[in-house]
Image (cartoon, rainbow, N blue to C red; front, side, top):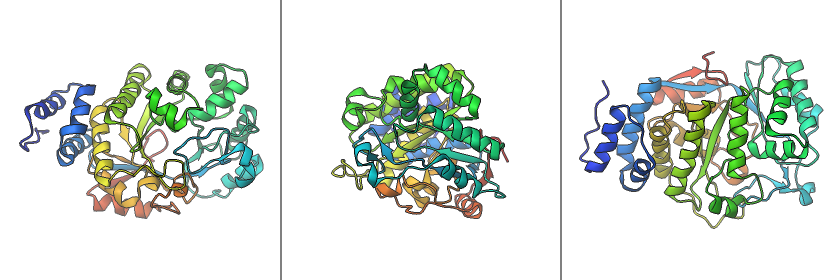
Length: 367
């Protein structure tokens, strides 16, 4: 049923197609070769074939909304357009537990299934504060899935509490935390990471926190910030480290490439990559990340049109309805300044791409 893509490629690229068809695993050299030498169209065809093999024409989404507790942060990442340094906190916002619970209550009677909580790293919003917030949410709406806190936020709050990763994550889980988002991974290469976000958690800490979460039965997503000063070699190294952890734990639900946006940050001189590069990156990710079930195009960051195109380049998930509840990428100049989609809009977008929109919960069980 799944045949080789015949497009007159080199013997080296044809060997990659043969390896995929035979059920083999691509290595780093294969991924690098696709990035450097394969045409975007050829990689896209391979990735789409792989998506269809795994998921058919299904396009997954969920009904979700975000809470961003604060944009005040103790860290100063060069690529970030969202946060305000703690010493300039008068320029930012900080929500109370009551205010955040009121945001949840605003969805009473609405069929949302997930609240996504991420924000800046604020020294006053500590582990106990967030454990209390999660308990408040669970008490008010027990069936709502709580996906919360990047590894960057977790590293700070757990370290400040004087606990091990396991102890801190267990305390959050016991309070009602269901899963982790994938943010804060950026690029794992230490030289690049030091240049763009050197003061926050290390690559090793990010991987250790997610691995510990998986061991505790807390699933998560994984991300990669691409299209800035990194090279293809850095991207392959990043994905390989994620794939290695997934081999051990199986805890990642989805991989989410995140495009660098250059507005209103300290890297505004770095040009953004093209849409063709976005699509090729999704395709290589689908082919290389063979043990992570889903590849997600986060449409508030790349725009609805590019996300729709990505469905033909290996992507099977569009995240969710969002309901204009996040500012992280709109403040960096993303196409979607007020990100919101109805389920009808998502279904139309999928149908126009010959797909079928399928509502899921946060663990990819069909609703």
